Image 1 (tube, rainbow, N blue to C red):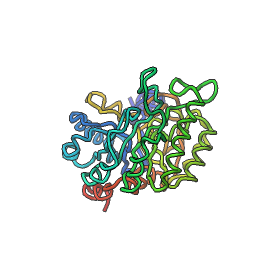
Image 2: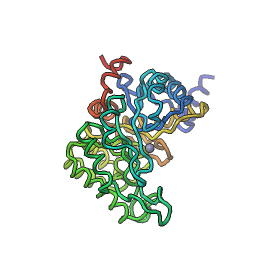
Image 3: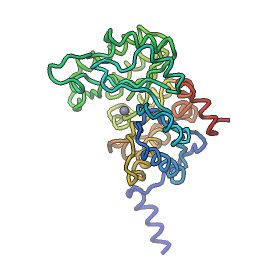
Image 4: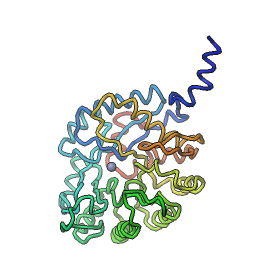
Length: 339
Ligand SMILES: [Zn+2]
């Protein structure tokens, strides 16, 4: 019997998906800054169940989420989540003009919104063929809103400004044309250049994480624009495209500018909770261990773990978020995540 148990642990577990990753850092709270809870109230209960399962199975304290939408229900979301979900105002079709106006920024901050989510991926994902609209994030039409955000201290929350553009021969389907891709990226740089005090968290590593030279451009952007930050949402599945030492070096070099995020959806289906827990656990294993991890949050391209030091992890998991999202620090004290 004992022999069987030993065989099970030594042979079967590593290949079965049962291998239990237990974090070395149960005391570090983690904030997912890129969550699409929106106003799905059933989903909020599932988020809280997921949180409990994450603690019991992996000792991981997935403490809070930044919700990129659902703003009409902010009070209910605060109440149902016990304060663990903070909400942003949002725009998912800015190609047809922004919903929120310059005068909305200060009142929105007073109401407790923590950022303005703007989805500005490739315009052909929002505009029909031949339809007129705003193509790039640096369009003059957006300028008054960015100026108001800059003046009032409204952070850009997980701005989506392009789609992934892989290396030649493996461009991927999202932004296969490198010229269109770089027009979108340069549009972002113009916004940062025009608004030096605007705090922008740009989603998905600004999609400069699919080629080693893109990572170098990201180094240039972070070195040049001190209020520019990136989140890691949906990037883990592209790490295999990058040189491992280069990527690890990048994290060690810019720990103050990187925020943890996943792009998790509304989690309306309760039966999906165990699987989502494992998907989260894989992202933490990639950041924390030197193991070969079987995939990221979305896809199953194996990734060698980055084995990041504790000081780097603390910043990525929550310390950087504390500097950016208004009211987060007092919220963390309220729910006893900080002393
Ligand atoms: Zn997203």
